[in-house]
Amino acid sequence: MLKYLWFIGLFLFQICSAGQVKPNILYIMADDCTHLDLGTYGGQAFTPNLDQLASEGMKFERCFQTAPMCSPTRHTVYTGLYPVKSGAYTNHTFAYDDVKSIVHYLKPLGYRVALNGKSHVGPKEVFPFERAVISGEERKTSSMIDMVAAEEFIRECTEDNQPFALFACSNEPHTPWSKGEKFRSKYDLSTLKLRPYMVDSELTREYFRNYLAEISFFDEEIGTLLAMLEKHGVSDNTLVMVVSEQGNNFPFAKWSCYDAGLQSGMVIRWPGQITAGSITDAMVEYVDICPTFVEAAGSEPPSGIDGKSFLSVLKGESQSHKQYVFGLQTSRGIFSGPKSYPIRSIRNEKYKLILNLDPEAEFFNSIERLDEVSGRSGA
Image 1 (cartoon, rainbow, N blue to C red):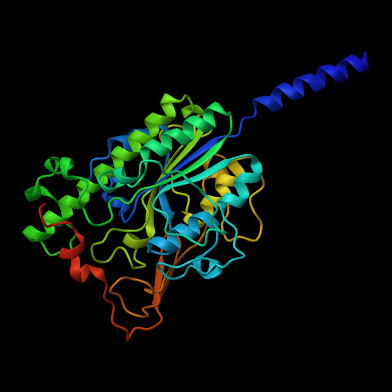
Image 2 (cartoon, rainbow, N blue to C red; image 1 turned 135 degrees about the vertical axis):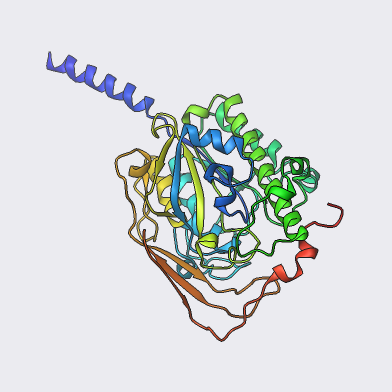
C-alpha cells in the first residue's frame, strides 16, 4: 500500500512541477521622461495604454534611479550594481569586464534574453543580449523599437515553449521631438501648465507640447507591445514592467539629483501575482530590478550585487522595501557639458540631502543648444 501511495505522490508532484511555468518578462523603458508628466501620474501627457496597464497591475509612487543619465541608468538596471561599482559612472561609457548582467542570470534558467531598441551599454561580454532587429531602415522613420523583430522574437519563443525576457527600450521622449507630430493636436498651447521655474513663452510652450506629444508616441509603443502578448496568447504569463527613465531635457530634471531627475514612474502587471489596480509607496530603485526579475523567474537573487528583490512587494506580502535611496551624477560624458560637476544625494521617505562636491564648478549642458536637438525646425 505504501508503495502505491509513493507512486501516486510522485505522479502528483510531477504534475504540479510541470504546472510551475516560468513567467515571461517584458521590460519597456522610456528615455528622458519626467514621470510626473505621464497621465498615469497626474500629468498632462495622454497615456491611455499605460493608464490601462496600471489599472491591471501595480503603480509605484516611490521608484528611483541612481544616475540621471542614460548610460549609467541602463547599466544599473541590467547589472543590479550602482554605477560606481560597475564602472559606468559616466555617460557614453562601459562596465568593467568582470561585471555580470541580467543575461548571465536568466539564460541558465532557460530564458532567451533579447534587447530591442536603445542599447547604450557595453561591452558585449558583460551584456550578451540577443539583438532583436530585423527591419533596419524602418527605424529611421518610426519607433527605435523594431516592432517586427519584437513580434518575431515573441512568436519564436512561444512556439518553442521557451520563456523569454524582452527588453524593449524606446528613444522617446528623448530629443529630437520629431515622432509625435500626429499627437500634437491633442495639446492646446494656450492651456498647457508649465513648471513654475520655466520661462513662460511661446517657444517654451511649443517645446513642451512637442515633448508631451512624444510621450504619447511612447504610450502607443506600449500598446503595440502589449497587443503582441495578447495576439500570441502569453499575456497571462508575462510580467510587464514599464519605467520612465530619468527626467526630461528641461531644466532641473535630467543631469540633476533633484527628484525630477531621479524619481521614476514604474507600472508592473503580472496576472495572478499582482493585485489589479494596486498602488504602493514602497521605496524601490532601478538597481533592484535585476534581482527582482531573477527571483520572479524562480531562482535566488544574485549575491554580491547592490540591488534587492522587491518581489514580496509585488505579491502584496510587504508594504515597504528600502529606507534610503541614493543618487550619483558626475556630468562626465555629457555632450557640451563640463569636465566635472560631481553631485550626490541620499533620500528617505521624508527628507533629501543633495551634496555638490565641487560647488565652484560651472554647470552647463546641451540644453543651451536646444534648437539644434529639439526638432523645432519644420515643426
